[in-house]
Amino acid sequence: MGFAETFKALSDPARREILLMLRNGKMSAGDIASHFDMTGATVSYHLSVLKKSDLVFESKKKNFVYYELNTSVFEEIMLWFAQFKGENNDETE
Amino acid sequence: MGFAETFKALSDPARREILLMLRNGKMSAGDIASHFDMTGATVSYHLSVLKKSDLVFESKKKNFVYYELNTSVFEEIMLWFAQFKGENNDETE
DNA sequence: ACTGTATTTAGAAAATTTTCTAAATAGCTT
DNA sequence: AAGCTATTTAGAAAATTTTCTAAATACAGT
Image 1 (cartoon, each protein chain N blue to C red):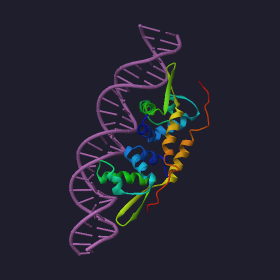
Image 2: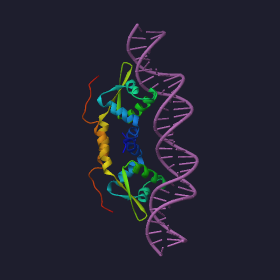
Image 3: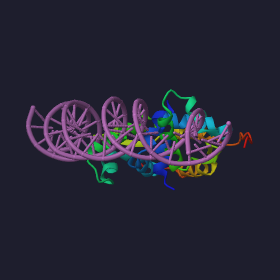
């Protein structure tokens, strides 16, 4: 899965905004795009980055593409951060 | 403080590696640099990015500069991720 | 004050990312 | 199948990031 890709994906403000928008359920590419001041093509690019990093997944219905949070990846990221909790310092000052 | 900067900082593999190295205590810029196959100047650049994002802080002793994790920022990041836990979906399928 | 070690800054090249426009694809609906 | 709507892909320009070399700064020890 790769933290590199995941953190890269998270490093863009538009992409983080998209994730926040998806908290209360799936949205179509178009609805997501309409919240931003950029072309649909650009938003589509950001969605593809989020998809490649597994932070979201898509499902198709009619001619819409819906995006949805993949919460399991969030759990994995939390585990990465957990590496920094607890285990303490060598007071080598 | 700015999540934008923080996530940007975390998006680079070398910088994440530096953070992992710092888990067991402070290290000098030179010691950090010697673990990488890049020039000291480049590592210095990465350290400055980590510093600007408050993920690490520095202290000087003799002619060494020591870097250390700033654990409080990690807590804040965890809070950002916490936004994605719990509060659930609108089953608007 | 000079020398040496540790680190950062400046400036430029290379690589990557973000964004756009235009065109392509996909799948209704009539 | 033709036309519409929704979305993605292609290709290029602009912006940002990463990296390097060379020079600058900082400061300790002699």
